[in-house]
Length: 275
Ligand code: THU
Image 1 (cartoon, rainbow, N blue to C red):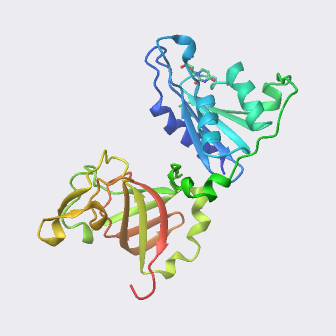
Image 2: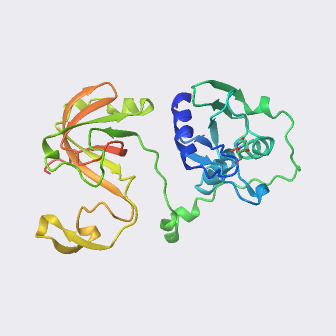
Image 3: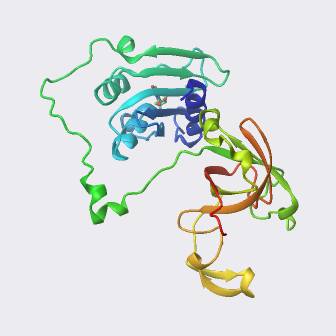
């Protein structure tokens, strides 16, 4: 994955910081060996020693999500030079991530890159390290299904639909762009052969859900949420079939998307033959 993409993700994660005391939000994005990206942001507390830095928040989230091998971490804050991880984060990163590449960026696109080994040459270790690999057995057991999953969007929708509650009524005739991140562009190989594609997206502005609601396509009668296309659903996932009009490298032009500007795209899939 490109350092610029990981930095862009860290920059986006920074928005989720809770930093009312310092006013200094920090975002971090950790790239796993498998290619997943896990983010973190600093979370402060009035009992100031309880504050958790962005880098450690990302490491903790990644370990809990089942990752133990990491390649790179990006950190972004609004300072020059770009933020260098604090000593506590270097110690924690070293133990769980090892000699990863640390990419430090700011909002002016200044970038510094160093190996964690150089940033933290003599880490503490008590010498009683017991190998504790991720236990995959939970995933293979019946209870494993309850573990929440996280996704790393592959791109976003760009159009003029800025009010997610009011997509234009004639959206079926309107054009949108589907912008795929550079690191996933190769996955579009031969997409020009398709007339229609399915966009799986995440309705990022939807909040909460109801399990029953009115279904416009069926005389406004009440149906379960899994029996309609309502946006307020437990996982805020949408599936939309669109016409593929054009491709320019990583940017697709499509017709018929009922998705607001900026909607993150989780996946693109072709139409099942016969559908
Ligand atoms: N902070 C981080 O998130 N990462 C670092 O590497 C250094 C500092 C946060 C902690 C605190 O919320 C704020 O920056 C100001 O110190």
